[in-house]
Image (cartoon, rainbow, N blue to C red; front, side, top):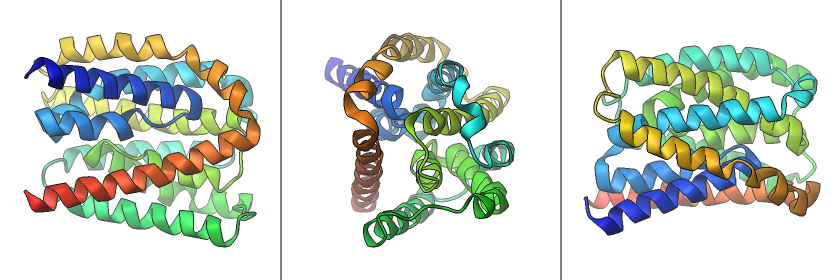
Length: 249
């Protein structure tokens, strides 16, 4: 791997970690495609599993005061564990393009619904009823592709949560599903030979966490809401580009 490629990977990890420290999502979304270009999807998912889990743990701890303001989080997170195990075991057996297309469709549908009905809010009773199914789907995406942020963020954004409970909710989901994913990766040997790189990336990720509160304070509540929507839109575009590039290979 050339110096330029290493710099590109480190830059992607830093940017993704900073964005995640503010919004609760962004590290796998930004870093996985870049690492995949140079080292393959399996390596990208494996090397980011530990740093992503560590960052999620810190975000959960830092925002634990907002835990009582989440909706349907317990069911969502528990279902996410099962989904992550299923997705990780299916890694390499299900065509990645199918997973990507499905994710693009789901997130695009939500963004369109927000444009059509800007004040739309998911009813809490509906959220509790459908949280297990959505959590399972999110876990499968996480395990099979390393990217579940757009789906998880769309779900909790639909509840119109403020930054604190929003970040706590999605970081909790990513923590349990990502932790389950890391355990499966380790048990199947996919982390073998990649632990040193993973540890180095973890140090970089942890160093960016203090930037989150500082940058989010400057955004304000409306700015934060727009940042999440912008990130969802950008993620959809990125996934479309990634899918197009893969199809041309």
